Image (cartoon, one colour):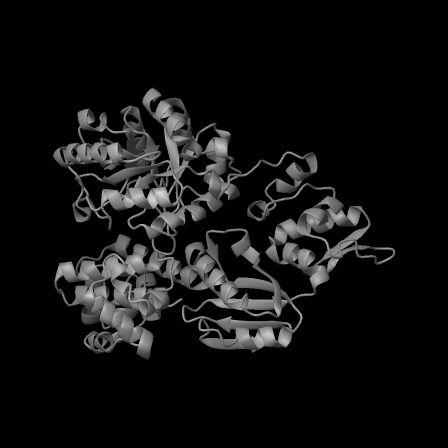
Length: 573
């Protein structure tokens, strides 16, 4: 899909306009449009063909014309002209997380830095400290940003890889020669970041499948083409490998190529003790070379090894094999178990839709409830709500609920935890809400002790329902701040505070490891999207993937409760 390419151009538009100190509303419009395109689940080309581009929030007449131009010509002429007004070196530096337009412009003008390599060398040599606005800590942050950039180039977000893999598989399914097809590797294990995409297929005519694959619209470059394996590079720089395998070995190949490496090693060790050999081609008896896994599916192959079936998300050699030997694997939460979303933004702050549209979005997804949790007043850039506006919103939500059947909007807020640990709104107003989500949006550079103390003071208020995106990380952009999770878990358990798995692709926070730890503490978690558009509600499956990797079951998840059960628990709290 070309959604991400156009989103990247719109983000660069905003960067250049910011360097040129252009209209802030114009800059914000490009950023918003880029964000909405990134979260769009439909193909932008299909929407353009159906003349529905202006249905996308933030896409007006001007941006519609730019999108159409890109889809027709592969470029946006006004953007190419705008690029010429800013030195290339400045644009390169903007790729570094934490380096903003003003800093990049200053580094170019004062020092003449033209490459990231040159910037890294000067930062390591402490040659930047003392420049306007730059200190020793800034040099350190620039170096961290460069490391993040390098990692980001090596790996892509799960939220980017999954729709791309699905779009390619959807195209290949059109071929009558394709019999079975699925993705494997770390994508099938739903890791938060993916190095490349592996797709397995069985086919009666592999050569036709390969010919079709290397000519897909998602292909920028063909890296290799063979009879049974081909590799391509997408315009986003993502490598996709396609393998054609024998039908009788499909189950074995899927198990092998899903991994992880350590999981496979552990399986081979078990097999060896049984006089067996495991490979991508099957499970063979060492003495006779008989293939016990011929035409077998994954569950049957695990059974041969004396194990119950292990879901892909658990295959990291973190105790899942021992649990499978004992028949003690948990029944993992499913997307269908989720009854609603408890962290959603509306037009009242920085969301794209009004309350009625969000209610319709929840109903269309089969939910029983949706919590409206706009930002609080201190987040001015997001048009955060003060006490007066919250009371008005509560009243409007009540009016809307009177018209709804078998569905309810819950009134809530995403309230800022100030640097001193106090909450951003008066407790009398917070007490009128169904849900209070507390979050940190500023002061990330406080020490681990200060941040932990800050969160625990907020917990002590007795007003917090859910602690949102606990570490504050943005994958590929910002490392999470440090917290004493032992202390957080202890008090969350004591105060009956729920921790959030934030399903936004760049967050996926809590992590799978910390989610599992929270479960072991007896803490319930909420899987929320933090959606700012209707399409972002579909990020929920990414949060469910994190929960499954964290060994969570539906009883561990707050929003697996029915509306009646949820309200009973919230009011009791």
